[in-house]
Image (cartoon, one colour):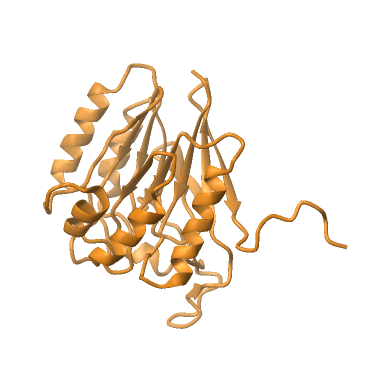
Length: 261
């Protein structure tokens, strides 16, 4: 199996303001200009700040690049607007789950959002859908799961209170399928790695801001940092079905190829 490169963009929070839109546009341009372009871009939730149709229209324009882009909802999103404006699908409040095939890789994109709530949960309908996806996925070929809400404790006083409910149910499914090479999430506004059900759990950074851990937060103040440049995760799945992840900061001022004096 040739190398598969999947980019992860997360928590874009389109809000009709210039700042967040410009940061996403810079990230998309960076990915499109790579010598080896990603085979796909996964956007792991909180596409918009508050689910307005105009915000999804803004996101749709930004995601119009010559690379397949697969978004999923987060707690700041609205399923109806997400479907109609961003995906161009009929109105529905059902979970927005997708399973694109990227070469030999199957990506199961899971909707962990709960309408009107900040925390996350996977519905029975989503679990049934995921089991069907795994049944249909090729034997001995890699599978990658992606959702918005992390199913693990991240030592974040903000995110840990609104993470994925009943993570043990997902853990049992992950542990029971050797083809699953990892789980991707967003929500935390922080690059983070840990293990979940014996597999890598990769939390993608936000393009909009950085949320600190319990060693740096002073609730209710000093919570979000808007100074850092946007960042992305780049996931490589190799011929041995092993995933390697690089986190990359995208400087808004552009690349400097010579060390400053």
